[in-house]
Length: 276
Image (tube, rainbow, N blue to C red; front, side, top):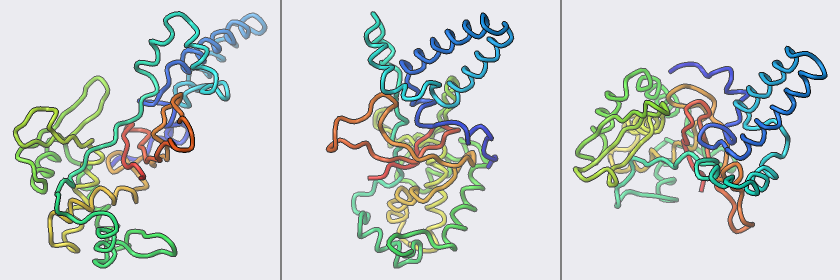
């Protein structure tokens, strides 16, 4: 497991990566360009270059330079002929990951919570529950071991604890993402896709749960909700960021449509958990 990138502390995951809003980016690049021209004339060409460099780095790390950009940029760009095309790819949200827990007869909800508390996986901490130190230590040891291996080996290991008949590693060379795809012989649309960080977290949870829960179905069912207790990315080690399902310029329509909170790895640009 590698250490977190120093830039991850400066980067705003909710406005960058797959969540980057291109209308906001275009507006800010244009404004930085204007600032570069002004600085070059009022100061020196070197001063203009420095303004451009600082502006570009800020947009890359933070999503935008000008405060409150998400409030005005979409309307501004939409008024420009052809500007709406920028919304087709911009402001997307990392997909909610699939999970190993697909057993219809496995416990869920309050029943599953009760099983985890009774078995010593979770414990009460005032008005909430947290992993017990013993389980959390075993879980993190398993994650560290899995993170050091290849995705191909990870897929083989996930297959051993899943209900699937086949497993394969999938890599997106253009965007840099890696997945474990599980299937029962059907087409791609019927496959279960786990991002590499999620596959590491859930397989590690299943392995660590073996000392607490004898039923494999219950182990798989518990693997997904246990992801809410992650603080760092199981794969790269970066500190997870709290975000929402709302895209940069998406927002929500009203009090009845509040976006759900999520845990996202800013370095891997992967969603680890969605809070219900």
